[in-house]
Image 1 (cartoon, rainbow, N blue to C red):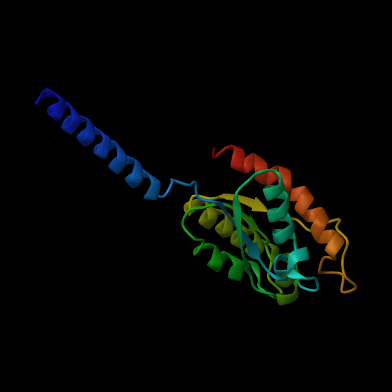
Image 2: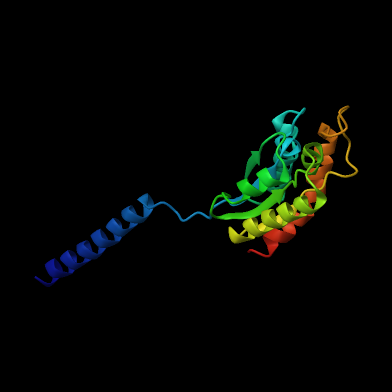
Length: 178
């Protein structure tokens, strides 16, 4: 009888171990979510005049991935949008977004006759709304970059240079969040 009890106990322990192993093998591993980044702006953010893969948001995403960051870049860009329009869209940045790269719509404001004071107020609203969503705001500046013949929109080389310029700012912002 003693051997029989021992064998039953061993089988019970073995079966419990086997069952645990089976259950754990079907459980999905916990995976870290991708870092969410939003590119918010107007036509240069959308990559007007270049292929979307050449626009700075796609290039920046590629540079970040090459550095080992698991990122997901969302582009929220409306060609011709002014700082007021960009500010209104900043209020709906998806939850969980960690960084928002924003274009202030300066050229479009100038075309629309928006005063500098109004633009600055709108930029303040953009930053406040980004922070209210828990994200780090980074302003995108297009000065000194190669342009298309229209003098406004960036060339593919301009987008590449901008992505390289933004990379250290984004990695610094992400470093603070780890």
